[in-house]
Amino acid sequence: MSTSEIARPAGFLGGLNSRYHNRALAVFMLIVIAHWAEHIVQAVQIYGFGWPAAKARGVLGMPFPWLISQEWLHYGYALVMLVFLWVLRHGFAGRSRQWWNLALGIQFWHHIEHLLLFVQAQSGWRLAGQKVPTSIIQLLVPRVELHLFYNTIVTIPMIVAVILHRRASAAEREITGCSCGVPRRPALAAS
Image (cartoon, rainbow, N blue to C red; front, side, top):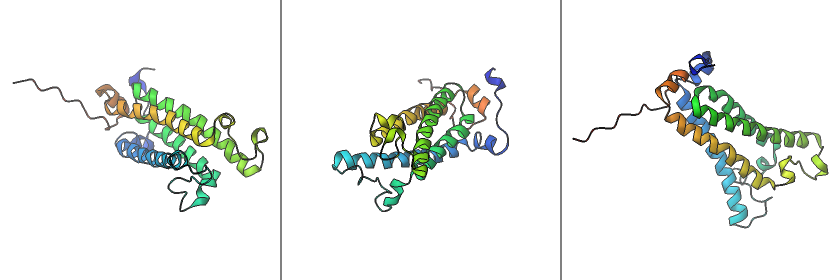
């Protein structure tokens, strides 16, 4: 299928991926940054302040300690990320779409890991006889470090995709109908 044959979604999704893509992408990236802030603060609490992992709750977990232990909240965020990555992908084309799809694929696996944690929290069953809900990769890597890693490997291709998307060619903007990319101005000739 050539790039001129890519079908754009209609209705709400069409608008979200064309004239409102810039705003939707900005909202999504703010959500991602807020989530990153939580993980960074938690890492600083553990490695900078020497707090035990159970006491390192991030920003929101300090006034609301129950948040950190609610697996549905973590699963809900993983699901929201997955949905945003899926829905907003129609606004990307070319190389930016490839990078965005890479982030989507990685987030799909991250979502599976959180789904596994959520099922364990709800059912009482534990993976590999662990005492607490445990994801597959968490059998090898501690949870705090693992989630920093997951968030890093999802965020890097997202950032690359957004940069490439903002520098989209006229042909790519035509495919998506998105107004995010600012047309490049020709260099001014020296007088």
